[in-house]
Length: 57
Image (tube, rainbow, N blue to C red; front, side, top):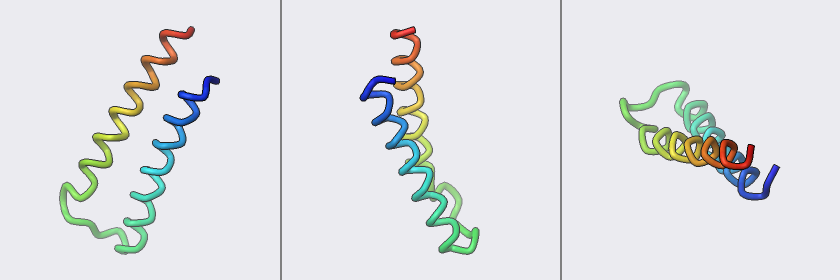
């Protein structure tokens, strides 16, 4: 796996981890759309990762 792919996966995992922590600290309660930006960023990173995987395969 290339370094760029590893970095993208690492960023995705960090964002997911922060969402998890925020959810746990809030006892599962979060205002609607609280994590929309985070999920948008995850989507963008996954799209970029998919593009890299397709290009190198």
